[in-house]
Image 1: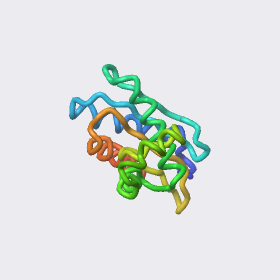
Image 2: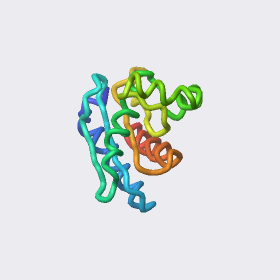
Image 3: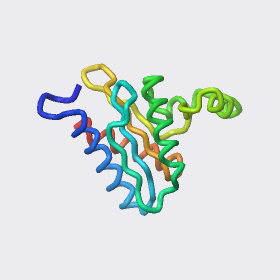
Image 4: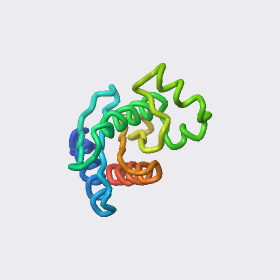
Length: 136
């Protein structure tokens, strides 16, 4: 869990603020979602000019990182491309696309961060920057 002086909401907000700064520096319009361990969205930001679908994708990515307890970039490399669509149709809240990471505290997963709106590489880099900001 977050330290005694830091609530999960504060952590989630810092992750979102980091994502917004990262995206602005690169002129990329993105959406960020932070979920707690129960899968509840605790913080979200959708930048002006980002596509509406980026919210749904960020949620699915964050849910996937939480459910599988791994980064979606890692998971995406393990799933055959032809299976990604079939899995998505069977489980619409699952997305094997890079751009989400679990948040780990004291060896336990306490939530996840999902980013969407850039290229897959940008989403991965941004999610990792958000995680670094809340892990420091």
